[in-house]
Length: 246
Picture 1: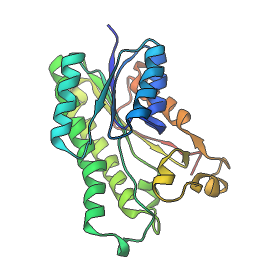
Picture 2 (picture 1 turned 60 degrees about the horizontal axis):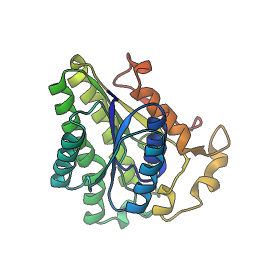
Picture 3 (picture 1 turned 90 degrees about the horizontal axis):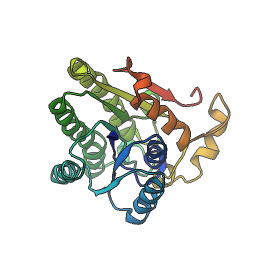
């Protein structure tokens, strides 16, 4: 029986790259997305061609009811969950704190923090009930260390919360053989920069990275999938930078 992996925010970028690797490595996949149906279907098509059973789960992780409905789909279709890549997240237009309003901050933390915590909660409940352990990888950001002043301190703060949550949850569930880790991507070529109003940001700042280049979604996904795998069986509570040294 193949292990089942839930990937949130799986229609593009790092989530989609994780799905491609997971399918090639023998996972069945619950692929969550919010609105990009065509992109999600394209990822699912590639994964099915690689032999994976893929369940598409449309849900906004900012909505607790949508999270409940997503897990009901997974329960009905697979009846198990072995791993979670907690990847769904948002960024907003670059701005200073003095120009951010309540609505922006509320949405940022509902998606990036509360949503991620609720998704992890439901995964833990299923892993504990099955008694077989599992793996959760939360996607943080180098912004959690850098602060991202004059860019998006709200995003950076939300990812710092994910770092703290990762360590705390890992301590809570380690005795259940559930491992909880985080990955902090650095300057990676994904659609995230365009969503922040700077589509050329990765190229513009590549010279500031010690390795003098931007990273790829596949490079981050490879690190994530190692943490998910049994090869990382004695790793929990850790946060791994994939930043080119930045």
